[in-house]
Amino acid sequence: MFKAGCESYITASLMTSDMTTRERIINLLQSHSNPLSAEEIILVLNLQNMKPRDIYEHLKHIAKSVKARSGGKEVLAMIPPSCKSCGYIFEALDKPKKPSKCPKCKSERISTPTFKLVSTY
Image (tube, rainbow, N blue to C red; front, side, top):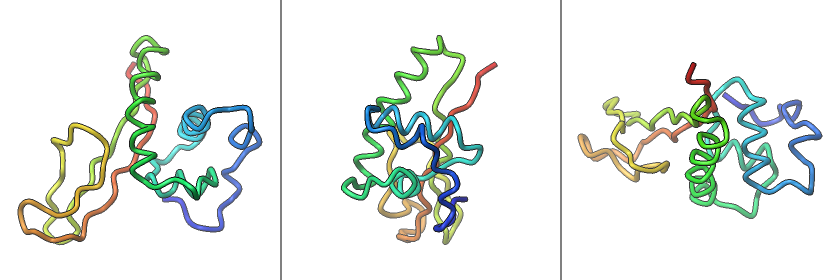
C-alpha cells in the first residue's frame, strides 16, 4: 500500500501538464505494481481539488477506454471494499465506490476499493 512520503513513485510522465487527468491516472496504474485507492491516486497525482467520487467517475470511463484500446487484453480490476468488522466483501458493486455501511452488520468501518490494470492473457 502507498505510504505518505513515498513520492519516488511520481515520475515525470505522470506529472506532464499536457496529459488529461484520465491519461495521468492510466499512466499511474500502469506504472504501479500494487493496487491503488482513489485517495492514493489523488495524493500521488496531486489532485487535491478532486474528491474520491470524482476519481471513481474517471475510473468508470478508464475501464471502458483501456478495454477498448487494448482489444480486451488489458482491463481495470477493482479489489472490492470489505467490512472491517465482519469481513463482508462487497462483490456485487455495479460501479466503483466506497459503500457507506455493511448490509450484514451495519458497521461503517469499510475499506476502500483499490484498482489495478491487469492483463487478461
